[in-house]
Image 1: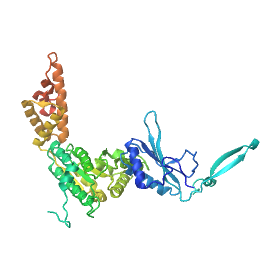
Image 2: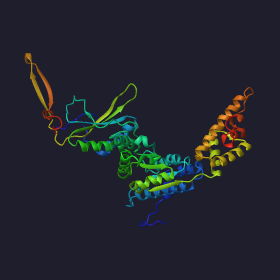
Image 3: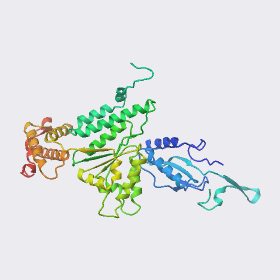
Image 4: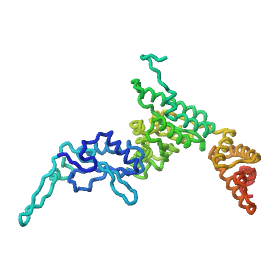
Length: 138
Length: 299
C-alpha cells in the first residue's frame, strides 16, 4: 500500500527535477529546509530522525539536492521527507513537507478491532512494518 | 548572405540581451588600472558568450561547461575582493552561475577545531555558496605543513572534490598574496591544476592611486582644493615608500582620516554658518597633518 502523507501526497512521486524546483520555491520564500527519515510509517508518528542539521541561509537548491541524494544512498529503504520551516514570527512552523524516498515494498497497515463492553468496538491501525524491530523493517 | 546549410548567428544580440556589456563597462569605469585582470575578465566573458551561443542554438556543439575556478594573487588592497564581487555578478549575467551571490570565507569558516568538525563545516559553507561564487581569502592558511595533525588538509580535500563534481554549481576563487599562494599551490598540486585561471593583480602606480582617490571622493561627495590635490599626490608618493602600504586600502584610510580632520576643523571653527561647499571641501591642511609627512597626527 503506497503511503500518502504530507504535501503532494496524492500525486505520483516527484522526479528529482521537480523536487529541486520545490526546494527552489522554499528557498525563494526564505524557509529553512531540512531532511528527515524514518522506517515507522504510522501517520501519527511525527518524530522522524533528522538527517543532518536544518539548512539555513542557502541560496540554491543544489546543496540540498546533494543532501537528499546522500540520505537516499544511506537509507535506500526508508521513508525520506523534505521539510521547509518558516521562521517568521507568528508562523514558526512547517510550510511544506513531502516524501522524496520510499521503501521498495510497502506492506501497509492492519486494522485491529478491540471489543469493549456493550458491543462497542475500538479501532487501531498498525503498520505491518513495525512488527519487526527498528532498522530491519523494510 | 545566409544559406540554409550555413546559418549565421547573432553574437551581438546575445551580448546585448545578457547585459554583460553593462557589467564590463562598470568594471572599466569603476576600477582603475588592473589591465591584466580586465583583459582576463573580458576573455572569460567572451568564452562564456560563445559557449552559450554554441549550446543554445541547437548546433550540437557542447564542449561541456568550462572550468572557471580562479586564483587571485596580489598585494593587499589591489582589488581582489572587489573584482570577485564583480565576477559573481558577471558570471550570473552570463548564466554560468544560477544565483550570483558571493560567499567570502577564510580558514576559520572552513576548518574545525577538533576531529570530525571540519567536514560538516566545510560542507555547510559549500552548500551556502552553491549557485554562486565561493571566495576564499588568504587561502594559504588552509594548509599548515608545520602541523601534521592540522585539519586544513581535510577541508582542501573536500573542496577539491566539490570543485570537480559540482563544476556547474559553484565557482571557487582562491585569493592571497602572490608568494605565499605560490608556495601553497606547490604543496597542493591537485588544487593548482584544477584552477583554470591564475590572475595576478599588479600594484597600482601613483597616477592610478590618485585616480582611485578621486573616484572614492566623488562617491563620498567630497572634493579637494587644488592645494589639497597636490598634498594628496605627495602623500601617495610618500606613503608608497613606507612599510605596510596596502594600495587602494591605504588611500581609503588616508581619505577617511582626512574626513575626520576636516570634521574636526569645521567643528572647532563653529559659530559661523557653514556653506554646502565648506562641508564638501577637504583642504590641504587636512591631508598634511598626516604622520606620513613627518609632523605626526597631533596639531
